[in-house]
Picture: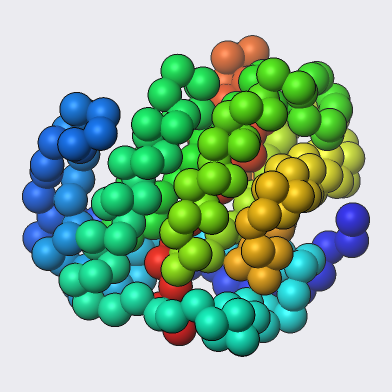
Length: 223
């Protein structure tokens, strides 16, 4: 998969602006509620990612695809409520799978470790992960007013170019699976970050295992 132009590199926004906690009615977990602070989080920008596009011509292309499909934009307090409900459904669907569901402002981040998604040095999704991905696709299809960034990451073992390509192939595999389960391709960005964005030390086996991952970032569509 070829790498195209760098679209944007953002900063993590102010994630705690007016946010409060609430008990998830589906899972019983205490999570951040953004229902009353959608406008504030939207202004802050949430958590933006730098990514490479390979599915359409930039953010404008994705916006046009959604509008063309009749998907309406979210605004104001409706954003937080919509994402709260989607987060609850994703938590319920992914409970016990090893995939973490985190909230970053108005965005939802699914962290899929490679030890449960891919065999070592492979980009084909392991069959045991089909069920969890089916659940993710089902929830995403219920909430069409969101966009989806699928981003592959690698550890620092091996050449940089090889790790970059592997991270891209893994992200593409997840994207392809979701599209085949009905998720609209126009909602997607697919990217590989290689070893450039570690979340743990590459000096240990445990740290490298954490860095080998695919992240799915679900963001409200604001038009």
